[in-house]
Image (cartoon, rainbow, N blue to C red; front, top):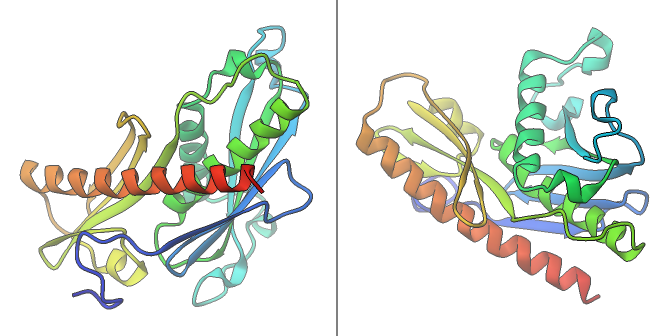
Length: 242
């Protein structure tokens, strides 16, 4: 039994509030336990210079943590002059994950920027950002469709992400901060609704790990992501019918 009374294979309770911002084409507040991330998708009628004239669109992401999203205040990165290496890595991961399920030609020559701002961090901020970022992206694409700006749906599949790890020799799903800090092995998995892998990040933080442990962590993550994708579909269907 874990500190929040979960079994090793249980994910944290997830909540997704769509339409959280009145000003964005698509937005959600996503909660993975005590981790809360605000995801907002913005449609722009332009693309990076290297895509001009190609007929293809672009999807990218930005990620940040509010100063008091953590136990002690984290200085704003804008005051440092540039984002940290960690921030750059995470926002590239989010962007890659969202582009993996997009037909960029169907999007046309426009960009969608997904901003992911961590309000409260308790482990798994990048996986929450990807999972919530997809829903915000889907809502923005829905707006484009309502305005007849698309000839076909550019979203080919769902995408979601979750973490897992080996803590005190036990494989566990969806680590909170204390578990993540104590983990011998840490994994983040990004997967499509169809079960295709987008990215696997697995690291022996304090010890090496075996093929069998890797397979067990993968199985835990697959189960968790299947649940997340089902929940994404419920949220989008319910919001559409409101």
